[in-house]
Image (cartoon, rainbow, N blue to C red):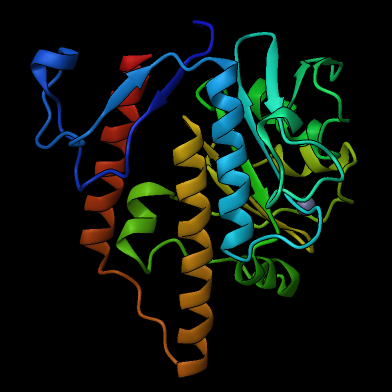
Length: 256
Ligand SMILES: [Zn+2]
């Protein structure tokens, strides 16, 4: 795995289809502004900070809640600090740890949910970023013990997929990775029971976008339940969207 591997691209505009010139594949429509680079820890610290601020501005965090991480290479992970409000953190607050959890760089303690982040990177070599918050609508479903449907909004099928509701695990303990274990291979978003939301991505932007998408879904499902009806996407279109998502996954797998 190359060092500092981080592939940045903006929000996908519809179906991604191979671009033979660029990737030796064939796309119907490629993201218009796909940028691939090897971001340095210096740049990633800034991105980590920016996404912390965005989580706070969106109302997904209270106090020092929430944590974000990026895998730097086979040995190191950059993570937000413990006990510091992510809405006001600076790049210097970021902490770099190894996979034993030892701080390699930084003047703060790493996030109290470090075990959860390290577990994800060890279980999923395709994941390079994790975002965790207590986003209020998603967390409401996690507290109510009600799973979110995956078949009611096309963008959720296309960009997120399944959203399992995990068993309860006390935050910050090794029970959190254990609660993810049954689902880790098959999902990129998890409702942590009585706790919050965790999303994964092949880069920070994807993990963050999935976070917003799931919170948006939770809000819409909450409102639709109050209106009294939820219709699923017709099954043939649901399957078409799932095929599109797996084609996108295959594209990324080949690109690795
Ligand atoms: Zn939490």
